[in-house]
Length: 520
Image 1 (cartoon, rainbow, N blue to C red):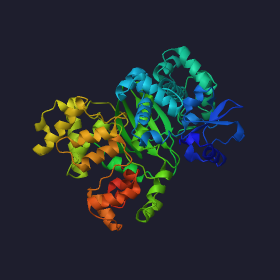
Image 2: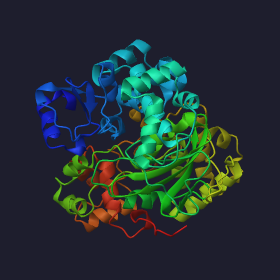
Image 3: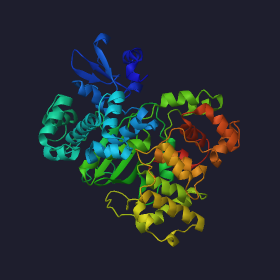
């Protein structure tokens, strides 16, 4: 049974205003015609409520978004990022903007199903088809641009993916019960800044966004938007940001003024993003070369930081093991650091085989300088995009400063990725991807499971042979061999990727600590 089908559970969540269920389901009020998140402060009579699995389904039923709780700004459903079935794969691709770029036909082609099958399956489980889901996302993207940029409305419509100004106006009015101009004026009044020609520093994902204002992270950056990315509490950023920064590739990633910054390759251009954890949200500043990429950039940042996770559900399962319970109680809410580019991480996983973190960064930095696309970053030290598999497949293997066997492993991987024979993206079939990785030269369990955990986002990946995991397990009194530890890990399923984060965190390594605020 899905959450929205369990009326009793939904009503309990609403009575307690439990923010943990924001994004799990939508509650619509038939007497007012609005839909809300479960934690909305409003107190409608329970008999007047209807429950839907998504904002798109509520919109399709004729409800508009609540102006008070802004339900479209809640974290996404945890389901779509921890499942590998057709529905979850489709939802991840829609979130990345595939329907806007390639249409429903393109979505179906990527998934290997017919358009009719995709339509039928999504409507049955999510309450809306791919076009309605994409429309809801376009409305959200439009609101971000209306409230955080000074773009003319015609440019906002184009950037958000609308085919016409009329469709843009009608959708914004239908979803938010306000015209685009009224949305912008309201944003300015709330922040008390500027005029209707100004660009208020207001989040498109929540009610307000503190900018990352430091001399070298100025909100005045051309094309930059300041947002805030919500998450479900508890939230432990230590291993998340610690891992990203400790393994950062020079030129592609950096830690500056308390923020993790990196370049991202996007469908229409590139972006530079800065992400800074706070107790209530992750402050996000995005500088885009093409505004049409906003939805994709936000989606990939959320995916990388695992912000749609349900930490209470994860920690509850892990805590059933008495040996793990103390770790969870000490720092609850750990996330799995993923990636904004699955192919990039796979290449980096091979570079990291049997070498130190520092050596892996050095190897990756050489590839970036030699084959990455240069990008400007006037407010930081970023210099390149990570090279694509197509570019790397054409390089001379002799340029790789590594043993011959690992050169063969690298070239085999990039060739499979470049030719499209290996899919590690948001719409990938996890089982098929694992099978293909296992068939490549030089790919053992550590590399395959690392890619499954961070590229594919499998919540149940487990690195039983990792030295740090084995040392942590032995210290806690768990079995120490890969075989016996794998048997013990059955207690943690389906959240073994999160167990890996807790076990790693017992070691004294920079990946487990938030970097120093002033470190560069």
